[in-house]
Length: 183
Image 1: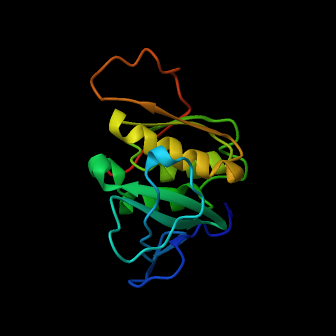
Image 2: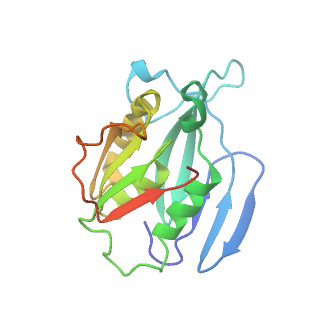
């Protein structure tokens, strides 16, 4: 992730482009819809474009700073299977100049209600050791997104089930950072 400006945007062919300037970082989005193989088919890094029968699994290329992340969305996973605006904003903030260079390196981090995992994966790219959490239904999607982006993650990212209000003894608290967007 580039520390200069901390811009986040979605790229690739598509329509509906929008750019904004908020604080010290710029954010622009462009929606990309691609059908991906089912989760059981393995970790596909090159999604297949199709116009007909798109299915429930969609792929997006999201650029945070200067790093391209490949993220899948799965509408069968409910609300947690979608990429929401708050995740874009938090990922842009993490990569902005609000934090000194190297701030995230080795920081024990947990993302609550991670959905597709954009902020947690962005923190992992910046060097944090991250546990991205959501309901059990979303964990395969989180695992897929972490594995597809493993080549750009400089810290560690792993997915784990967390249902709020239930036992948290399997988590290695305390954490240095707690991330949450659209929860």
